[in-house]
Length: 301
Image 1: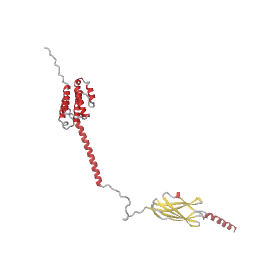
Image 2: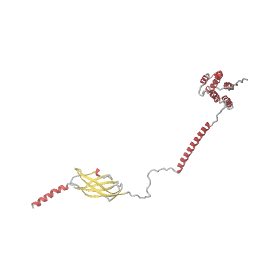
Image 3: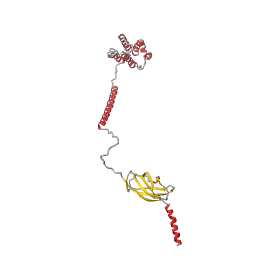
Image 4: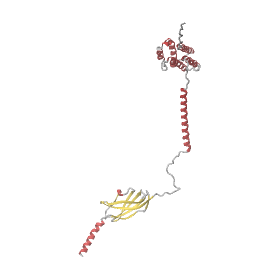
């Protein structure tokens, strides 16, 4: 009898200790849940009286996301947790979450809920309408215009390339005038008089051309590059050529007359024009290099 009493006392002493533990009593979760669609997981927990149940957010697998968690007591020693969960995995999986008591965070219990995540159903519905802004597609007419524009641009580039090549070839193949310098210069004077520049009152162009005839003659006959010289520089350079010194006074008057027309915009008279033409002709005729006659050797009999 004494032993029975001791056994009863021992059993009664360990019952409160067992009642202090927290455990998962009941779970309720759908067997099949759609992918990325929220579902509710209900978990009933038993715990000591007067304790508050909390859950560990870090215990949830990465394949699931808990959107909200609500706890409500269902008795003096039990609590129901309603978790709204989003699944981000497919096929069979297990949703796990850990619970603990607010006063004893080191003591936890884990709930494991097996379920199957199914793909989202795709269905045809004639009532559905596109809500995105319209996507403008370039039609064939636009592409045709772009193609024609590119073709025209390519043809234009080819045309200009050929034109430049032809001009360059023409310059390279220009015939060389082998006539004596004084013959070329006198012919250029005649061409200038017949060009119509004087009759059209283009006096500045007329005198520019007349002066260029002089410069070209000096370059061809005496190898003097005076194309960039002013009138003063040209006269200074000609003083170094003995064959030209005698003609410098008349040439100075010719250059001064041309400068008045070209730079002072003076309108020359026909008398002035004839005088300058004559001066240039005389300068060319008097400075033309004369061919040397071969010496005749005397033959003694």
